[in-house]
Figure 1 (cartoon, helix red, strand yellow):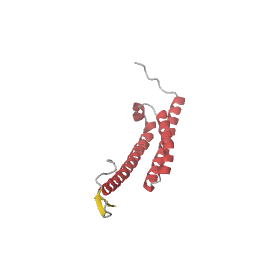
Figure 2 (figure 1 turned 120 degrees about the horizontal axis):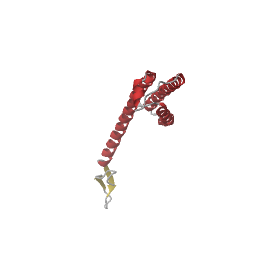
Figure 3 (figure 1 turned 120 degrees about the vertical axis):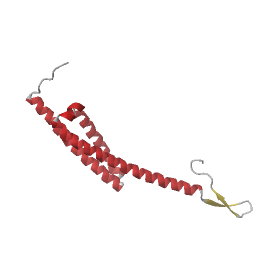
Figure 4 (figure 1 turned 180 degrees about the vertical axis):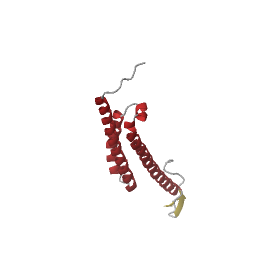
Length: 143
């Protein structure tokens, strides 16, 4: 097993610099997630889509900066990042729940529309020129 050598001052400074940069990126990610939530509430899907590129870039940068899990959890330089990323996780979950609720509402609306279409009556003329009423028995899926 190899011995861990103590870090030089330059290595410590570089490690701290990476931790500070990662924490700044995590704070920017928090801001993006907040803007995402606002966009979802306002149903501004164009703005929501615009935010996805930067969010993906931030996650990729953070992945490249972060050390191993053991170092991340044990080194005090990285504790600020852990707190910020926990906040980001919670914000992401909140956004996902809002999206899921909106999708459920849309699905419910579609189901009610499909049900009302399948039970509606259609008035047509029969061979004798009289009005005949027919109930549609088939929905969109059966057509």
